[in-house]
Amino acid sequence: MALDRRILEMMPPSPNAGESIDWSQIAGSWGTEFPNDYRGFVDTYGLGTIEEFLVVFVPEPGRLPEGFDMRSESKNVRQVWSEDIRRRGAEGVQGDHLIAWGADAGADILCWDASVPDPNTWPVVVFRRQGIQHWRRYECGMIQFLTSTFLGRLGENPLSGTHLWCNSNPRFLHQRDEELSLARGIDPWTGEPDPYAGMFG
Image (cartoon, rainbow, N blue to C red; front, top):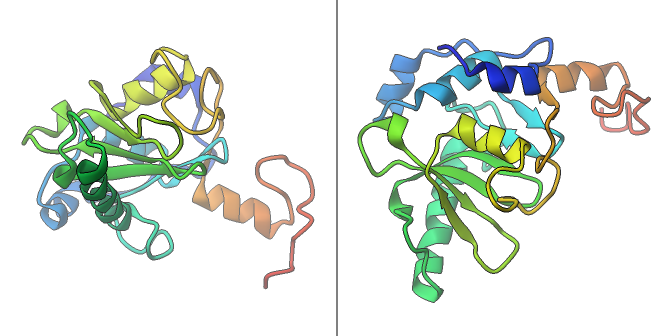
């Protein structure tokens, strides 16, 4: 699946990035297709982290610790929405159809509102843990949301941290590249010796 060249120019994939996904099998497992831009992202980048802040999920099970994967976070964010809708409302968000595609170090959850059949029309919904307005809906897809965040074009920072906001050259590391760097005793984000190398097995 082709990917918008703008994100490739701003954020080159790390050396071992990308996944080989059977998207027809995934569609059968989830009961839905996924947006083309997300599929292109997963094919090109795969499971990894942007700026040591935002983890982008893949739809396959077993790739992340239990409780921190696409299915678990989707279930989690739907539960949060159901609680919020009773307390203060979440206008414009169909919470029972949310699918989480990412989560960040600020405990925000990034989702699609998957309440319509065509996945290429799903808007991005952010549950922002910090701040007064917890739920924001963005009428764009995942890639446009990311590039607009990198360029500061959303009116305000949509996330609880500033790592991605107005950062026109963010860094992406695939999980494999992080693990290889750590195995060599190098902090993958700083390039410096990892002071905790060897301490945890």
